[in-house]
Length: 352
Image 1 (cartoon, one colour):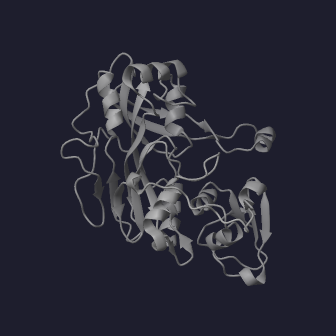
Image 2: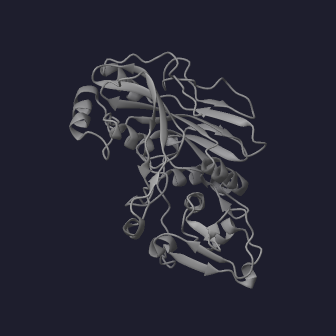
Image 3: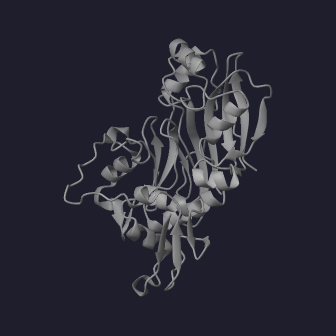
């Protein structure tokens, strides 16, 4: 854990700016996530990114000190990240946000052996000099798993990042996913209401107070199924780490291609029979209040062609409501403050 006492020189500074100045090598989106999950406290109370600090305030940050500081040898210049701009698929862009259709296999940030080729690298290469504005560098406003494809929002301005911290903390966004799971589901729709262990709970915390369970709810609708697999549309009412993957595994229907929570023998068969070489989880639709004016904005990404081919080989019919990339009349969909075409409604079940 890190602890800082605010000096006279930092009096009046916003908490988010203080964190960026104090931990310059930590991605901005990760700093905001730490605030969102209550890892940053001011005088023992949950910190807010926009709050102004006073002299002698005590700011505490939960986490590994060495990892947070990420000290490096500044005498050695950082190599330019390798990116392929052809991988960038823009769904919506304005002065506040850039919404992407993230490909499977691309990490959002560096870490765990990943040093380049991330969403952050791709976005900053695309924006160039416009990636930084008033001391804020464009950064993803939330995360999706490396192997998950689909809608991802990038904040281009600090007010947008502050806005999305509130949106995701208060569950004001509606997230829809398309998923292939093992086995035939007993009901055509349902709610998985099953608490999940806090993913980032420290060993010390578990030893002191046991496993910290967090509420987690996933609604689903079956779009098509056989005796072997079910093609499902999901909306999540909470945003726990690997929530969909952990929930379906818990009820005996793991997500196809999941290397961590899945059925490994089933995954091998799915690859051999249907050519499934990745996690079958696609973030297909995101609805949120826009940071400028808070108008409801909907952005959708079509199902990747490779996943559509897997469905066909598995004997599943793709409903007309599910858009497929590369198919006739296909287009990315954005419906928001600037208008646009109607949004995807692929078997959607709205979170209540």
